[in-house]
Image (cartoon, rainbow, N blue to C red):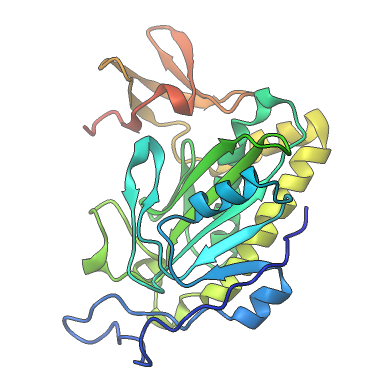
Length: 292
């Protein structure tokens, strides 16, 4: 799978002002340097100045028959969405909101693995960058126990057949006082020193490379590759081995120990002497049993 070439110039939304100094008292969200359009053009990554949702852009392209590998990133996403239609937006140039178009050839029963595969790719990238990244099932990416990235995978139908739109939103330079909730973090907040925060262009390239590498191996490797992914994901998942409370859509809770992840990517919870497998679409949220 290789990215498609199609680049839209990005406008400097700072109006020429330098990035905000995060060390200055009362500073607003520090703007990172603009994404390197020339480098990303060579990689076939499309850059938008601003858009409500990169997933919506890529979904529309998918319906029009775009080839696998299209990557769209924006400097400012104004109306992103997460699971259960939760909103997600960040100040300009403080995050990496991007979407990738995939057209998996594996059987449909394996498609639920795509969000987990993506989350694992993000964790691998952040660990390589020096962060203590882990996964919260199914695909929240945590650093030091706080959420730094969310993932939304959507299936889209079109004349060229079904496609998966993989959306990733990663908090990069949001300071602590700009984070939306107490359980969130950013690479800036989690870094030992502000100067250690990765450049967003470098980080985007690494994320795309790691995702493509994992996706290609999963697609071409058959059962053995699927088992390797399951083992690797499980080892990186902070949910496994923890006593959890699974909130179900009917208002009831499933409480027990998270034993692992099954072959379909479902979380297996041991409760009442039996094992129960729940899929991402079957739950409202999963939290440690002592939290509400």
